[in-house]
Length: 289
Image (cartoon, rainbow, N blue to C red; front, side, top):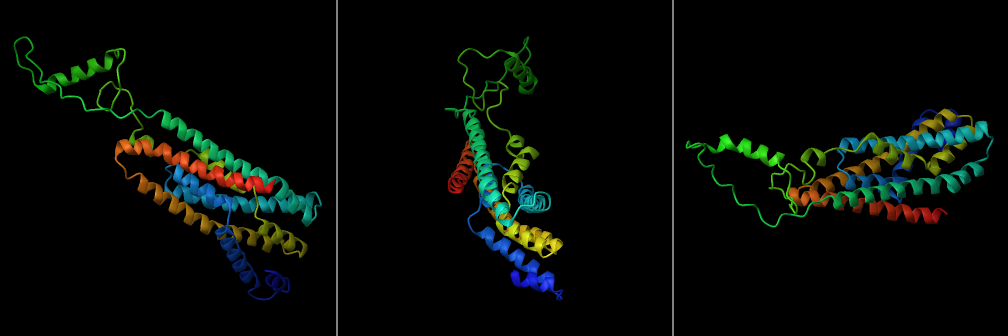
């Protein structure tokens, strides 16, 4: 990278393309190693049923937002506050790193809490299916078809109060919900969830991007540094996108269960995904303190 910067400063042809290629490779291989972004995106993809396109967009946006944080920190710190490189990096490592890890751990705890609430709302499976209703008898001496009375019987069942000790099951016909419907199961998370994910990753800028931005600022080629930071983010996003795809495919495989087992598997997946996020983020938080 240093050689590409020197050639770019000297005005050599192709130096900018070489710098951007190095930045992309740095972002890619840096993301392959330990990192909180992959854990958060992958854990969330396992915990919540999110379409792959939505999760991929969140992964890409979080990487670009992380580059934006680096640009804002460097240019605000150098141009406005006159900070040195050591102070900028120290501020990031001392304050932003622990804050980012704590935010990610909080998201994991939030997923666990939602999974526990969902598990608490699950109804026990019925012991046996109810016996079929007898055929309707004659009314005023005239035989009545089954379809003529089924609506009245259903309405009466809906309107009648449930007796004490009534046990709900999937066939009792009381009109109450006994688990998530298909629409509820497939309901994707809100934009608030997306904002939390992006913010949890973006709050901690990449150290390599900080060094690049500081060097290019001092060499008076700041525009190249900003472009390199975003290309570096694209390299990171390549790995994060792959993790997002794997998490969604793994979850969809688990969702191939029958309806009753599916309703019970969803909270378990959410709890497991949240626990993985908390475990990894907690370890990173302890190391950063």
